Length: 270
Ligand SMILES: [Zn+2]
Image (cartoon, rainbow, N blue to C red):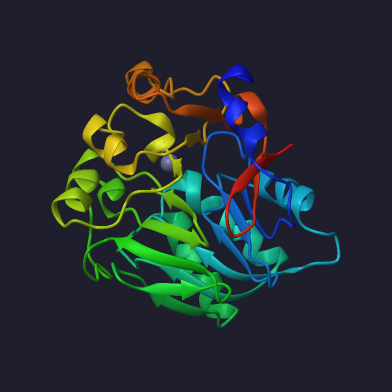
């Protein structure tokens, strides 16, 4: 791995400001972002209480507030951890698609949000969240408001979002599958990014070569658990990424994957 990451050594160490932490939550996804003004966003919460320990590694112990939670879709490995987060942290705003889900987990989630009277916003393409004047999150998918709609394949409803900070950009894809990827390309959305959060834990149902080429990242992060029962990341996806010369960073091999960025560049902070 180290050899493939020599580019990181080229990055300067001038006053780092934005932090993006791809948390090792086992099989699931969770990304913690802190802007220079200290406003915080957590994209997905992984599958259970692991998220609390991981947040404890990237947040000071006295900080019990996370401004915004963004739920890409209500699958267990993204949502279950949010129930732990919301019981242990003060949250101001939840961004989600609001798709219909009758799972026990989702019912519990909606109940807790109601009880705590947390503001909810249903997101769609074009919505923007300014964490800071220069740290801007833009929703790229779903293309339209899908709140209340039922999806047989919830991955087809997954939020895709980009984060721009100065000259740096990150693309977060949740569990978006190839159908979503084609929709993003067809609608000419701005998916070019320096860092790609690989869709659906490196499943072969995501990461179409055409999509990955269009993103054209320096590095791709795969949020995946060790020895998971799905066999993710799939070899097909690794082949696509390697074939395009993209550095691969995996939570199952590296633990938390932390980036620190100034306005010009990002570096990998161990
Ligand atoms: Zn997932």
